[in-house]
Image (cartoon, rainbow, N blue to C red; front, side, top):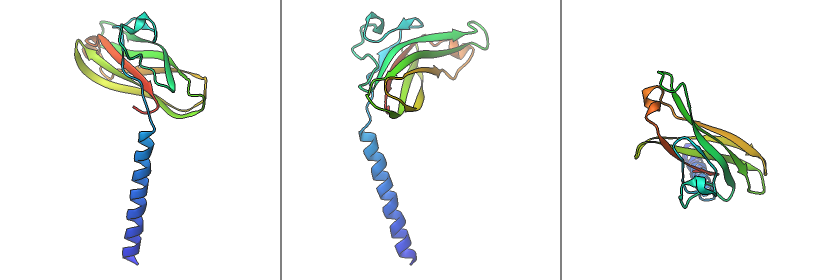
Length: 152
């Protein structure tokens, strides 16, 4: 009896793992779009800094984004990227995300994301991706790259 139970559990585990991997192959995301060191960028126009990737995917369009500093020059200084994205998939998305790579000069400092679940077609989402460092750590962040998709 114990052997059959183990075989059953192993079979279930393998099936669940296979389904999880199959789900990953269905996902897609856009190429990273350059940020602009703190100003507003709108994908698809000159605000994308000439990068061939506009950060959008076939399901999620980045409408705008910008880097925002708060308490600049203080020990509590923070930096984040805020913006808006639209569900252009034509249907509800069970999951979507925006990933931001924060840079200190040419060096990648950190990469973080914001996500949304149960996102209806045509809806706009106001996202916010916070850099985790504060004070001097946040002060050195001077640029970012961004992309959106259903799984990054």
